[in-house]
Length: 46
Image (cartoon, rainbow, N blue to C red; front, top):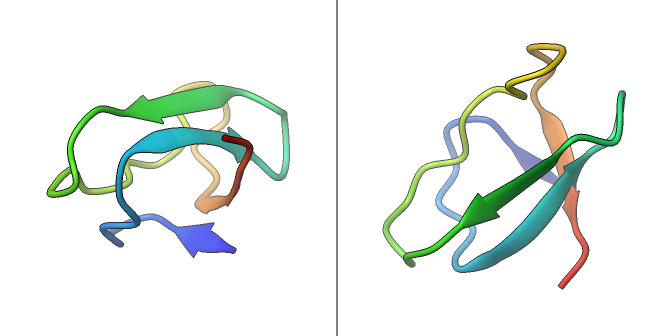
């Protein structure tokens, strides 16, 4: 599980609450809160 504020690396992450996808393009990007529901837990999908 990835949470807001972490730097999990490049990839596509999906909000555990609403399913919104967030794409991080760089290894230094910080995971934001979900842009749709503001929740903070994600899992990597690719």
